[in-house]
Length: 485
Image 1 (tube, helix red, strand yellow):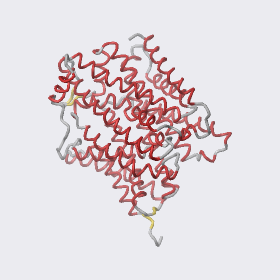
Image 2: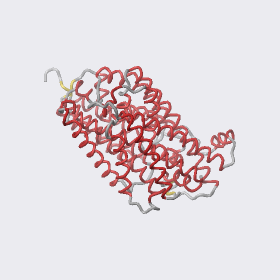
Image 3: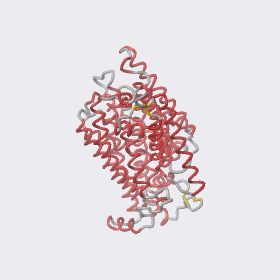
């Protein structure tokens, strides 16, 4: 693919986004950037959230990780389906009853201002790193596939991507994102289908033959029952449940779109629908991973390995698509990376801007004439932080999706503990102790994780979020406010 072709594809795609932004930026209010005027149709939101839920991380990491962990991620997917039920029938009614913009304002009404700000701060830290790691993978793919050959430095690619996202979202924020995500989700689904069909043709298989070949492949193992394994069924299922509750139900970037739906009933339908659609898409990614490793084996494509495990699993999809699937595959892959990058990062940036504006600057009380300037200043700050984090993690290796979920376990665990206490108990907290307790729980979780691994080679896997939430609850109960205080 020539440089001119590459630029034309990017410009054409970006022009579509800017056209959508133009039409959705009409009749804006001061809060449109944050709440989308609460008028989004739930089917539109549900379909668009596929792109946000998948991201470039899922696009590349899930198929690539099959080489080391078979189809064990499917156990995690089952847990996410259960998690969506909790979000639908427990969290959604609370958010709509309180009419929140920042979902962490629930903590203020339930416990107080210190707990509220603590919860929001944990979100800001977690989302900043999670979004930056997603952006990191996307930029690495774009560099490897296209921009290195054009001698474009990676820091410039990062700045350009963030700048493009700013251009089409800075005026209407979440209102624009709801509509642009529909376009980006459609591109992602199309690319999944194109990739599967490309491999099927390259291997000379019929549709039935492809399914039979996948089912017979050694990588097609769905369940891991080994107690000490990090991919053990119960660890994966429970982690899927808890992480989905945390990364969707307690995540401003995901809930912000859901809260643009007018009524709670539509929001519930949205959560159930998009979770099911993402589960289907991720299952297809697993099947695609089996096909990719089968293709690599039959074509004699060498894969770097160490200690029996493939080192650079995130490189497999780009490698095959760009060098073995022809021009159609390369173009489709480029569009998928751009779509998944914009669909996940634009919502994260908007959510970070919303959380900081409402939770720390009290945006609703800022005079009308200053609101726009304050929002732009916060938005600029969020972009700078994202840029710096991506630079700091540039040399990281391995499946980034695993890194994201591990970080989420340490940063969302305290949030999960706070919400569970708030929803299912009537206790009051000694608020001055809450920030220290949440930090202590995360550090305690990390210490036990390291101790179990070094002493017993027992990997708790993604269950660190369960342990973290449990420690948070226990410590908060020890330091709760008592009747005679």
